[in-house]
Amino acid sequence: MNALKDDAARAAKFVGLDADTITFRGGQPLNGRIHVRGAKNFVTKAMVAALLGDSPSVLRDVPDISDVRVVAGLLGAHGVEIERDVEGGEIRLDPTNVKQAHMAEINAHAGSSRIPILFCGPLLHQLGEAFIPDLGGCRIGDRPIDFHLSALRSFGAVVDKLPEGIRLTAPGGLHGAKIELEYPSVGATEQVLLTAVRAQGLTELANAAIEPEIMDLINVLQKMGAIISVDADRVIRIEGVERMGGYDHRSIFDRNEAASWAAAALATKGDIFVQGARQPEMLTFLNVFRKAGGVFEVQDEGIRFSHPGTPLKPVVIETDVHPGFMTDWQQPLVVALTQATGVSIVHETVYEQRFGFTEALVEMGATIELHRECLGGQKCRFGQRNFVHSAVISGPTEMHGAEIEVPDLRGGFSHLIAALMADGVSKVSNVGIIARGYENFLTKLRDLGADFTIES
Ligand SMILES: CC(=O)N[C@H]1[C@@H](OP(=O)(O)OP(=O)(O)OC[C@H]2O[C@@H](n3ccc(=O)[nH]c3=O)[C@H](O)[C@@H]2O)O[C@H](CO)[C@@H](O)[C@@H]1O
Ligand SMILES: C=C(OP(=O)(O)O)C(=O)O
Image (tube, rainbow, N blue to C red; front, top):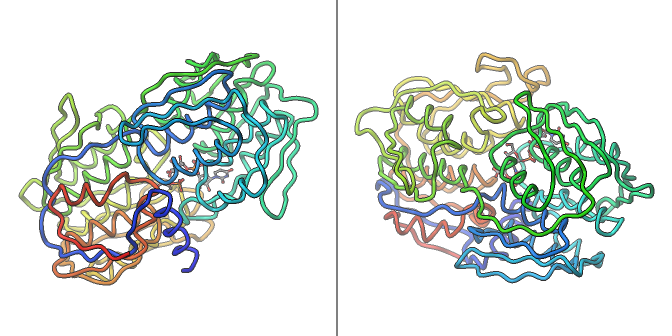
């Protein structure tokens, strides 16, 4: 539990959030309009990509979340000059004087985010050497980096595991490789992209992940001078180039944040217009939202999500890689499903331990049973390995206030929704973790009519 407190305190500090525990008075619908900016799962990677150029890059729609601060800190430690307009969402990254960072500065970022692992390729290209601190990120499974290290070795990198992180060198340079991922990992696909673009020769990546955030990273890399093609069969081909320049780019919107607010509208019987949300990247979510009874209206500026005013319907969901149902959508939606009439099933096939958040929901009155079996229909990697990775949610159940602790980013947002939906008072602690991926979430909640008080 101390590790979670540390996660929360660190993330809160990064964005200047003076809040640890929030007392909610629930039972009111969330109504109104909020604005979602660039995607946590893209912006941070585009910032790393700037390291590959020999001239400055400009990224727009950058949200003020702690993962952005962590990556900016690590880039700054490596000599990247950063100018940031936090309110305007613009960041300018000048990598022309990139240098090796001091170990102390690198380790100051240990345990804060998963993004540092993506510095490997760009630092090897620019400096011939990379030190990567211990990774952070949500505690929702083991989260090994074996695909990353194996891919880097295929490019010619030498990896030394040190007590405080990993050190990489490339004595013979980096050269193109033929790689096939065991599973279409988002991070490992990005690792290959960020390394292959300047490696000598051709790289072929089979079984790649093709999430919209990865496609936007490819857009950025192409703007910088890379040559990348994506085939329909999940094969990505990259022709290495000798030099790359900077980019000017507006980030893709955060579809995970948008889905979270949609779930909040459904769970609290509310009506939320999410400015910045777009239909194509949310197609799969929108289908499930509609099947559960949710109402949405796609407009030019965003998507309006609302409760139908009639009972919600149960759904069966299997999380999957894109274009499947994104794992980061499942936790907030489960809260709404506690109000559906009947039995819903969620089969989590991406992470082996992503149902820790349901314990608090059960304490608040939800009926959720967890199972080791693959309950969705398809067999996944976790069924045979005996992980608790399927949830059965029976509803509708009355929810009442409780004292709960945020376990991870999306689980934390689901706890906020539960506290707002429940009758009575709830105290939610460790809210700093939510600042990892939800910009100004307290202001947005206030704007939507939430009733709460903050304790530091
Ligand atoms: C910062 C960021 O973008 N985070 C997202 C990214 O995480 P991240 O990139 O870490 O997720 P991955 O797609 O790599 O992980 C998917 C699965 O592959 C496994 N795996 C991954 C790498 C590896 O070397 N070995 C291995 O076994 C993981 O343990 C997990 O079970 O994609 C996830 C899946 O869409 C999202 O939930 C996260 O929000
Ligand atoms: C799992 C997530 O993030 P990370 O990979 O940064 O831990 C998430 O955004 O839900």
